[in-house]
Every structure is written in C-alpha cells, then in structure tokens.
Image (cartoon, rainbow, N blue to C red):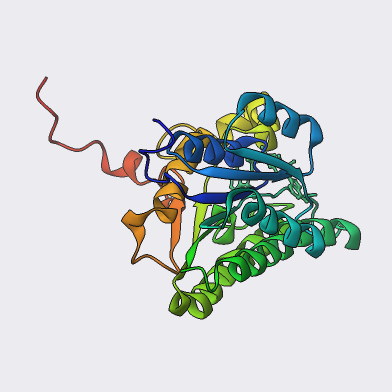
Length: 269
Ligand SMILES: NC(=O)c1ccc[n+]([C@@H]2O[C@H](COP(=O)([O-])OP(=O)(O)OC[C@H]3O[C@@H](n4cnc5c(N)ncnc54)[C@H](O)[C@@H]3O)[C@@H](O)[C@H]2O)c1
C-alpha cells in the first residue's frame, strides 16, 4: 500500500523494540499502511538492517527503554523528524529467567526494569508528546504470562501483569485527553526471543499440547491486532487487554474428550 492511502497515512509512530520480532512486524505493518516511524532499539546491528530495508519514512535510533533521558529523546525524535506523534507501540522486552529460590536481585531488576519500567517510561513520554496535539494511541505489548504464571518466570510474569494494570491506569488518566491506551497479550510467538522453544523438540511439543490453535503465532499475527488497537476502527477502545494466543488462555480445565468421546455431528464433505 502506498504511503498516502493506508489506515496510518500521514500518521507518526514510535516502535520501542522495533528492530526484531513482534516490533519489526508492527513497524512493517505501519510502513505498509503509510505511517512514518521512529524505530528505537538497543541492537545496533538490527537497527542497521532496518535502515537498509526501509529507506523512506523510518528513522532508527539507539535508545534503551530503561533510561528516561533516552526514552524522552526517542519520543522527541518523532516530533523533530516527522512533525508529531500519533501512536506509540511499547514492545521492547526480554527476561533473565530463574526459579524464585535461585533468582538474583540483578536478574529480577533486569527483567522488571525492561518489561515494566520501560513501558512506564515510554507511556509517560509518548503521552507528553501527544497531550495538547489532539491525542493519540498507545499499545503496550504484555503477555499471556500476565494471567498465567510459568516456572522460572516470576519476574517476567509479574512485570507483564504490571504492564496490564499500568495500561488500565494509563487509560483512566489519559483517555479524557484523547489518548487511548491498550494492551496486547500474545501467547507463543515465533521470534528470536523464543527460538530455544522451537529448537528443542520436546519443549516445542509441550507447548503445542497446550495451544488449541495447534501452532505458535507468527509476529504478523500479533502486529495485526496491535495495529487495529491503534487505528481509527478502535477509536472507542481504551483500557482493553487483547489476548492473542490461539485460545491458550482458556485451557485451564482438564481435556474431557477422552471421557466424553467425539461430537456426534460431523460436517458433510
Ligand atoms: N515471542 C513471544 O512468544 C512473546 C510472547 C508474549 C509476549 N512477548 C513480548 O513481546 C515483546 C517482543 O518480543 P519478541 O518476541 O518480538 O522479542 P525479540 O527479541 O525478537 O525483540 C525484542 C526487541 O527489543 C529490543 N530490546 C531489548 N531490550 C531493549 C531495551 N532496553 N531498550 C530498547 N529495546 C530493547 C531487542 O533488541 C529486540 O530488538 C516483548 O515485550 C516480549 O516480552 C513475546
């Protein structure tokens, strides 16, 4: 789609953590639909690749979401380069996993700072740019782990649960000023972050046994719902959490099919 006809034509977006995985898919979707985008990340090599792949309407910047001055500059760059800020996608995240009895203070701080404080700082400085300019939309990438704990994932799951509540709190405070704030909660997505789950056949099978959709999501399948939440079509949606997990979250009850048998009705072929 050309830069002048998509849902995000003449809109300006920042994608924090935009150089890989889900963030990169969001960036690509925004670009295809006409937006100008600041791509912020800490990985220079990946930023260089983004710069090569998207010549027009993308400005890349090294910025660490855990450092307030860098976040402020990243949001400011959208205004300097492209004249405003309409949408912010707060995607950067990773974890240093560990069982609670083993988890060091340093590992806890790394995960919670990146996944929770980073989203707070990005929300704060995106909102400051959007206030007084007619509002905007903020989309935070949380996780299914906001609702479902995982072994060795206490810091990550707690941080992601924090992102969900931070999103609701931000929606409460900012919606009156025309800034909508929503969260996407992905299940398993095939990205560099989760590569180890795909390389280990047994781990992969354990995931697949849990996911009714029978597969992981591709990054574009998270980007689509994230773009929807930032778009005009979602203009009355604020403070929402959108699970995008192939129905994983609804699998808490035991699988009764072995006891009940298959449905009697079968589709005609
Ligand atoms: N992949 C999944 O299965 C999955 C599931 C649920 C939630 N998520 C969440 O989605 C988000 C994106 O994950 P992904 O799978 O695309 O991972 P990814 O590793 O492919 O991409 C994350 C990007 O964030 C960047 N980043 C890391 N630390 C940063 C920092 N301090 N400042 C700025 N950028 C930083 C990385 O360099 C990388 O480019 C994360 O918040 C993750 O927790 C992922």
